[in-house]
Amino acid sequence: MKEKYGLMAEFSTHEELVHAAEKAYEHGFRNMDGYAPFPVEGLAEALGKKTRLPLLVLIGGIIGGLGAYFMEWDANVISYPINIGGRPLNSWPAFIPITFELTVLGASLTAFFFSLGLSGLPKPYHPVFNVPQFERASQDRFFLCIETRDRLFRGDETRDFLLSLNPLTISEVDK
Image (tube, rainbow, N blue to C red; front, side, top):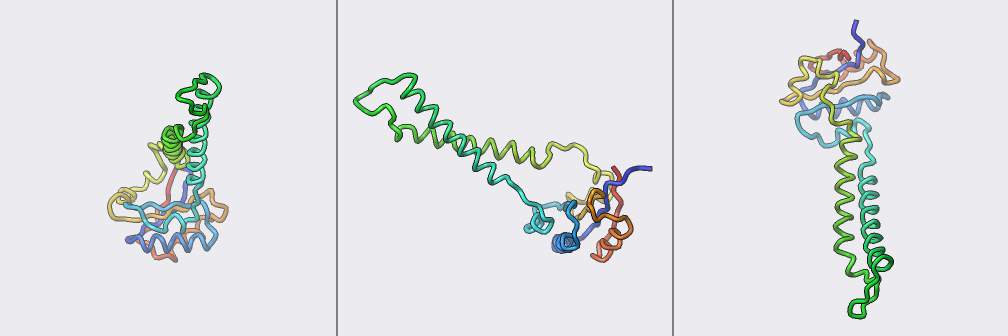
C-alpha cells in the first residue's frame, strides 16, 4: 500500500480556490498548498504563506553596497593612496556609481538564489503529479491540497471538510 501525501480538492474558479483556502486556514490547517494555471491574487495570504524574501533582498543589497564602498575605500585610502589634483583620498562622491551598481547586483543575486532556495526549486517531481486530474492545473482548474503531515489531518474528517467546500472532485495523493 502506498503512503499518502494528502487530499486534493479540485475547483473550477479561482474565487472558489481562494474561498476554500481561507476556510481551511480558519479551520486550522497549515500544511496545504494551492495550484492554479495563473497567479491568483490573495491566494498566498489565504493559505497563510509568509515570505522573508524582501528582507533578504534588502540585506543582500546593503551587503553589496557596503562591500563596494569598503572595496573602493580600501583601494584608494589604504592600498594605493595617490594624491590626484589635491582631492581627498576618501572622495566619496566618486565611489557612488560603483556602490550603487554593486548594491543592485547584491540585491538581484540574493533575490534570484533565495527565491529558488525558499521555493524548493528545482523540483522535477512532486506527489501531486500522480493525480490524473492535476494535468488540468496548467489549463483551467484550481486545486487545494491538504498534506497528511498537517497536525489536524484525519483521513475521513479532512475529506468531509473538503466536501463541505463543494469541490468538483476530491483525490487522494500518493507519495
